Image 1 (spheres, one colour):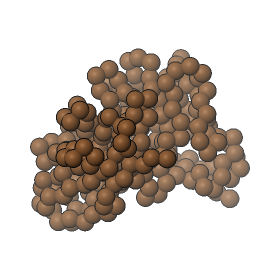
Image 2: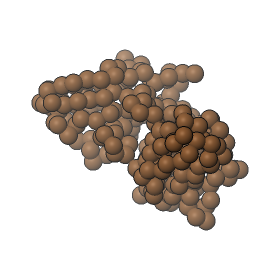
Image 3: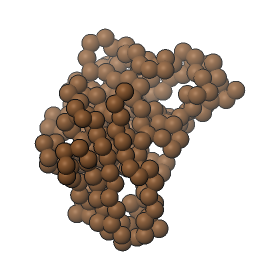
Image 4: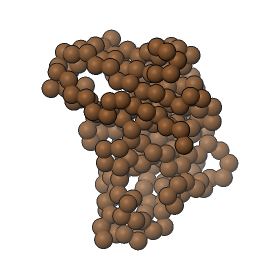
Length: 112
Length: 114
């Protein structure tokens, strides 16, 4: 069964540093998403991406965040200057034409 | 705006017993409803989804869910739980007109006792 692949599985970074989280979606998916889950809390929507542009973003997704699909396969989330409160599990997801949402196994980001 | 409520934060069930996890939604139209399971440190795995048609939906791992429009509910059930079912369960709703996102509930943590 096709999978959404996320790398790295765990990243530790110092506060103020930039991080890039990477995702390889399933090839026939058209919509792509980033979600995050702070430890012990709910899964929160960050941003959706369709046709090479952001289609929706949440209040969490401020100017420190950006997304790209640089080469038609990878889908990245960049955090420019990380804060302690950015520590969370970040999930990439894709959606097919039948509203099948597939999530990756996540990247655990720890900001110290 | 769409929203999901999972009233039970934590449920403990004996192995072999039946299970029902509650989910209530708020949505402006016919909802698309999902149940996901998350094992510790793992990603989100789709158990089942409802779009239309038969209100009783069968999923993987022996789970089923029933959509009840009158109660705005989409409860997840399993007749006999196994120790491997211990995990966090999330109900989600979406998409809605003009947006494509899923909105998740706060989750229910399931503990299985021998």
